[in-house]
Image 1 (spheres, helix red, strand yellow):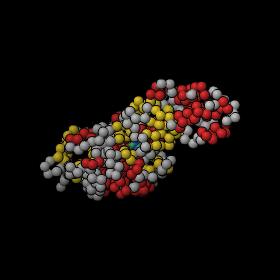
Image 2 (image 1 turned 30 degrees about the vertical axis):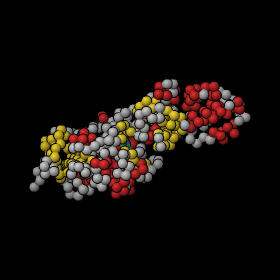
Image 3 (image 1 turned 60 degrees about the vertical axis):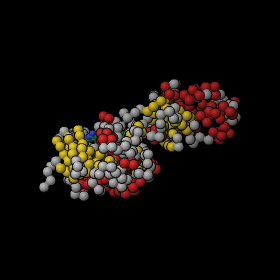
Image 4 (image 1 turned 180 degrees about the vertical axis):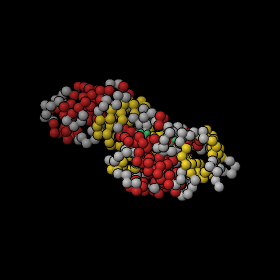
Length: 396
Ligand SMILES: Cc1cc2nc3c(=O)[nH]c(=O)nc-3n(C[C@H](O)[C@H](O)[C@H](O)COP(=O)(O)OP(=O)(O)OC[C@H]3O[C@@H](n4cnc5c(N)ncnc54)[C@H](O)[C@@H]3O)c2cc1C
């Protein structure tokens, strides 16, 4: 008979990926121990989606993920799709709705998703050790893993690391998984906060007047462009379009905003060329007034109060171009304290894309956000957590 300190599988990290992996492995009849250092499971699930958990995106494709190897996520995502997770949600009678752009949210509470996963784990006989810390991990010559924990020594033939990324340290985030990867000789790609508000020099240099303004815009960084809301903050910019583009931003590079993506400035010129109404009032009929006033004051003070009919075409064109391709140089980001995810992590070249097992260390698996696979905003990160958790859960 198996002693209580020996399991088939130990999973460290009771978040989205760890819970899913535990449920799948437990359902296969494996003895599973899930170790979580926080006092409860799934804390990020609980706060996600404003408390309603944007649990998947029905439009998920590998193109919605960033990674040094963009092909890595394909296998797991194709074998556990948004529809598989929706089927689980429906099995539990959890009501949900599509908010926008394929993003599915619970009608009631994220707590329902955590309870669902806990219930799946309980059916599989998963053992939970909450408020338990792991101080040392080693691999014996027979391949089994030995762990020193605050609840004593424990060992298993498979060890799954599901400790997530570095964002929001008060929620329990640590770099445990990335350190463990290095301990076992696995490369970790450079990490940075992603899906994060950015800070700009412009905000510090006189555009603070637009703090609180939000508008429909296209935020671009390199080749990546996202059209959604942009929110100006007193330190820079946030809102879905900026968060999305922030994942592609590198220090020293610029950020471009099209603040008037639907405005046809040639048409506007033809329409108002004989008008006595001043430029800023015409623009304020199409864009938020406070934004127009602050933008014109900074970039075109002489034009702002000029009747449209007196505008020099060249200066008008220059302002139009600036509104539609406003190049900002971010000074930085709001960092891990405000980032929704961490970009980078355990190098996917170190792992099997089928099982998430380390190619160098048999029996060692990495799943979820600890891996160098980072999703867009909108349910993609949870879909990766579920899919990678299932991929490992089926084999550990
Ligand atoms: C505010 C916020 C809102 C979000 N909303 C969404 C959303 O709506 N949709 C979406 O798709 N994504 C969302 N995300 C991202 C999503 O939460 C993560 O990508 C996802 O939770 C990653 O799953 P994971 O299991 O890899 O990591 P996590 O869910 O972070 O789980 C890791 C677990 O490991 C534990 N842990 C860490 N270190 C140790 C250690 N040393 N020992 C033991 N346990 C440890 C942590 O306490 C945690 O429970 C949001 C993130 C944030 C911060």
